[in-house]
Image 1 (spheres, rainbow, N blue to C red):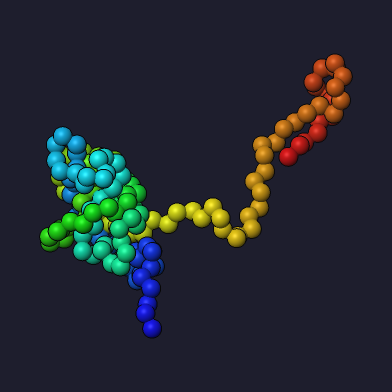
Image 2 (cartoon, rainbow, N blue to C red):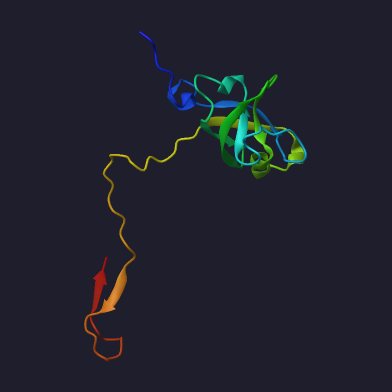
Length: 148
């Protein structure tokens, strides 16, 4: 029996969260960029993130104070405790490029499923108060209707 590789391995595998260091690359005009992704919210995956069909997976990268969601489009030969190379734009949302290296945690990004079969209660509109009649009497003293 041949086992099918999951489409998004981080979401479907036993890997829940990986911690380590993040660095940056790809700032147009400053450093090398992957030819198909000139700039944006992308990253190169270290070996701990490259499981199964990892390319195209979205992951959430967090420091102690901020998070970004990036798409894994490339691989990095990350050494030591480096786990991910962020595109410059993504790194800047976490810290200035001058920091160079950040301590981060990387976890699967779970997008909200718009086509879920879950039944949800419709949200109520804001309450609108209308006068009971359209007479020209002053507003005070008239009965009011509440409409949802």
